[in-house]
Image 1 (cartoon, one colour):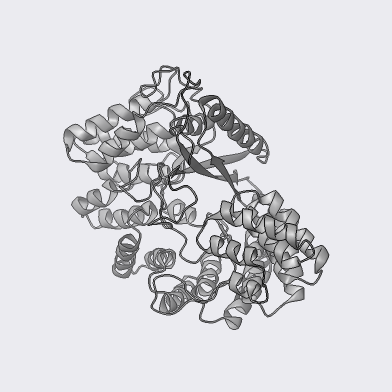
Image 2: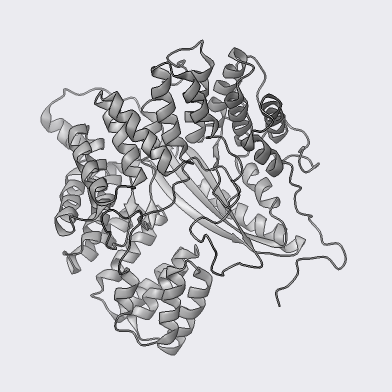
Length: 575
């Protein structure tokens, strides 16, 4: 699966755990005297995006003929999820300054966010024509070319980015991902080591290094890399999955079980992040080994109300939005991946030239490439009727997005829900990078390098080691192997296959806590929250101090917000 990484470059110092140095906004603001524009830029750096937009709107009103002011307003709109408005501002900036490589770069980023890869490609090419010496422009151009299957161009431009800024770990990492896709594991490993030389705590690079080492047969080094990835980002279920599989291959079942147990948190640790609620579109009525289909109409055990259609993947999203307390706001991020189903074609005689042509396919042939897009929605504190209207509007927009799926494609959805409290909404927080979240996110890894668009290349690290469809794991009579298989499917958003694997794991070992926790996650994914509560209670019976089970029960038993306001009720206003 193609990897799409879109960025605005910032210097990175070796040995640091996160990027530092002058930001791109510092550079844009260097010649700007407007106080509001400077304050807006400070809000951007603090991730207080609504306040930034307000400042930039004032700045544009005061100075409507300044290209940089429209650019900054566009950036503010981008980070509040209003990407169409960001494009309008960038184009206004271009009207005022037709030679702005920065504006074309930002247009490309916004189009990539929307999943419009061809438009993003054209925008990045224009940015490169205007300023070919910008490393971030070259990297973005190479990244979009990779997603379009234009591998020759992707290699050329990514290597150019490395030449222009050889100390930036992101460019070495992206080059490594190109080598991975081309099957050049030795070159991939070399580039990953270079990336880690400049940024030792780059967890994505450590994880990819472990996978490349395992493919190369270096099991000892792979174990070391996967352990380091888990140490760096304890909530990365992909790293836990790959490490647990290697442990199982070495018959280290005890440590593998402990590694997987921490991959099934439905709700967050105090002050930490959560796990992604992922559902696969369709296929919810598949049979489960040894039982009936997992989803059936009934009453929601948490809310005491009739359940939504369990065959509707968005019903999971609706129920979780309805649980957000009226006095709280929330931001919901939704990842959508359209994955074309493989087509059987007649094999052609293999040759070096035919392989080269296949790797450098034209844009018109890119329909076989998975398409990823992201949506962000803001749920504001509101009265019950207003909250219900907000939820309906969000769901209507998502349904329209699903109708754009290519014919015959599988659709994967992932939700990440972040609470914002009235008392501190928009204000600086003690942990602004990791606000409390209440969702299921298999890759709780943050965004160390400040990327604007992150692709789904990590899914390949799971897919490459999962059994083929319908095949059992390597040891089909061993419960822990079924747990690992179920975890892999859960990470990919395939709730039904995950549930089947977890049910089999429970059948083989009724005392397996990870199997019960995994079953609860898969039941949530497939819409059976009453069953998920039962599975968590079973896990808690086996392990009374299990934190994941306690947290999951707390969230699933949260009542939905009322649909109508009692007289005199409603969220309190801020003074």
